[in-house]
Image 1 (cartoon, rainbow, N blue to C red):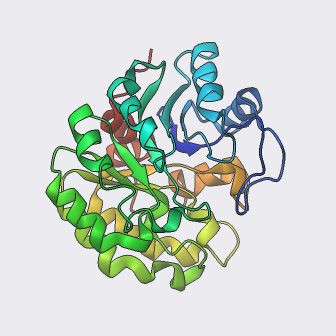
Image 2 (cartoon, rainbow, N blue to C red):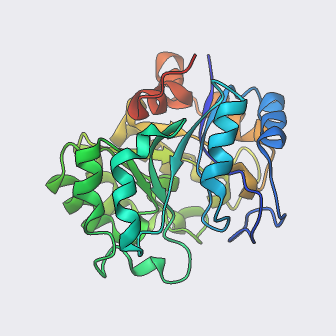
Length: 270
């Protein structure tokens, strides 16, 4: 089974946000070393907004390490002069879609202040999947998905309450699970250990994970780590899913651990 991480960051400058490793740089080579030790074959790079040159760094990683990476990139949504970039976005090496965390100061309002309104139809027209931290606005996110049925959307980090742990993290499920009825919505099961109160194998979040998996199914439920802010080893992020979840086995496990995200993004690995 070839394992693909649905979300990792590399960067060369800036101050990392949140609980990410507080280092001024984390290179593709450092990431590949950790991936190799954990048995991870490839990854979807998410250039972080704290590094203004992170898109270029990700593109260089794609060029330097063929078949190892693809990219969900970003540009400043609050700068109208940047909007035309969406038309040629996929012409950049490895660039398969877009992603905004909406966690930087001021960005938490973009979904409701009009900043993002133009994005959804433009991305749909351009055939660009969009991933985002949608946990704050899941009801509105459903409306967006319904209005744009040909736009592939991805809910980041299981759609859970960002700063919560244990059962409290799953307070969003009543709004999250109905999204699974929409075929153009998928979910990244990324950062799961970060929601746990317990130590590995993080059993206090297993039931919640199972509910989300049952709703979305193996083809729209993408394993990943966001490794630079995880409270455990890369290997444990892998084995939590491959060894500790008795309801996830066989062909379904293959879809969750990489096949699903490759198909969703249209990543043709060589």
